[in-house]
Image 1: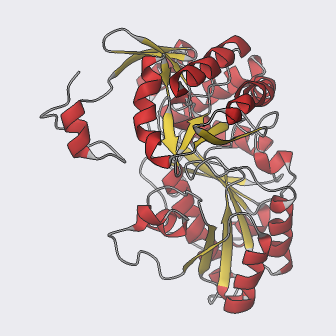
Image 2: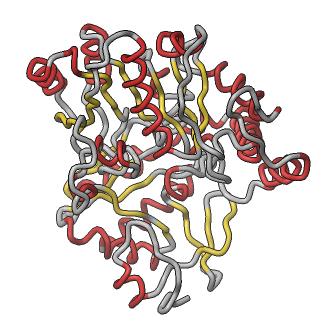
Length: 411
């Protein structure tokens, strides 16, 4: 279907190019496959945008949402209000939280979650009598959503171009060397730094796995210098890391906050959540403190029903174990592609993710369309990387089919 003259303004797009070439219109999905509006079938290599962990076409989730919407679609959870399903979901999430006793603050998505954590970090230190701790720190290559704080925190300069200074108290350090964080602390002073934001696996920035010991090292640096450690698990949360609900659990990071979204509802409806450790929640739950922050649709009852149904599927079908299986299979099938002359390297072996880094970054966007000719719906990420992050229901045979398609597309 051509989008010439279309009213839709796509996200992250050169709209002139989209208008000229037309949109790739997705009409339906089932399991690990999607179909376009011409009824051509494609392996969904990216689970939508990292989110369709349980696969497409799950009528169980749709039915749960329909039942909730016909009962009560939503109600504010400001003040002492809360929809019943939202309250039940909060308890269920707290039971799998990386830090026992965590509180759950609901948002409408990942960007909301990141901005929530950035604001809460600064407000926490204000309540602790240290209002000077205002700087929030991110890493090069990192992506933290597209709200003001997340855009400022992220280490993707092109995403900040043309906006001026978004947030004066945001800093960026090396993505792969904990010494960069130490040097910043020495330069700025620990008494001025509120929080360090860290993706366990850098996602949209190109799918970069953490160096051995890096996550534990930066966690200890934050602990030693009284800096909140915020783990951005919008991508890795709810099983993407392989074998655990969260990367924070797998690596025993004991984060002060965890930002989530995507896999929480498997993308069936928008929802996000911030997991807040008891240390950070305590001054707000002691009484007498208002945190004037929240979202109209945070904890939406229909979204909560989708999340509950998603968690049911994850548990019943043991999809955490399936994610761990994909960790192995993706590595086995994709690692050999590194020998191809058009490939610079393959990054895989941790979580249900892989990246094929093209030798010529300029080929990445055209390669997305080339993959479609071989029955694969893929995505470019970072600078010249092709993202592979399938749903957890993708079989080993489908992974092999996907890798073979990539090889054929490389020529």
